[in-house]
Length: 268
Image 1 (tube, rainbow, N blue to C red):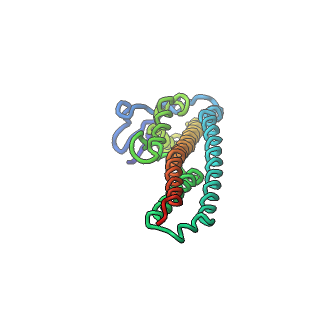
Image 2: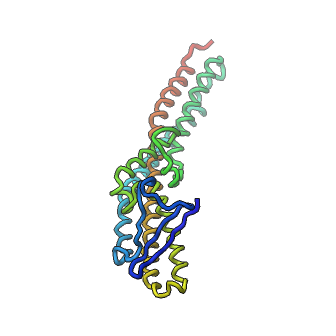
């Protein structure tokens, strides 16, 4: 879809009108409306607004960053212990009776147990391995469907239900955040063209101030989008950690039981 921003002025204000293709912006159907008057701008020094806005998600991001590091450290130690146990089991004498007096059932139980322990190790390694999350992943997430969609959907619901805490002023949801990014980029291009036009030579200073304000606004929106994606990564990590914890415990218990049964099964 092609986005268009039309600028107009009455000599004291600069107004923008947004078009999606050939259709003017419909605030009712979209659920929100971008700023119409882009000059005069508030605050007088837009950089001050940007500094304050960056703090909105920083605290949450730092918290989840520390939590993610703790989860990965725990997974690293679990993987080390489990790997050492597997190496000890495979390379030592308890396997000798099976090699000498083995049955199909004994071998099947042993291999099943080893496979389950390897699955546990794989789940733990998945926690340790970083995986990126894009803004699109969070924006399109729901609480149903996909192995990690519920985790990202929960984060999206948290953001959108507390928009005053997590989203920039005037942004109601992640969809409107994405639309705002597009609108601000198109607005900057329109202001750049208008500034170079002889027709608007007398408004050049005002256009420059409007351009600065929209540039700061675009940076603020991009920062919020990046933070949403980064925190989404920690929600996904927590989902992998939960899967490794509960699935790993089950696989480990069943695997150990199978291996013990293989050693203690009546030999024939």
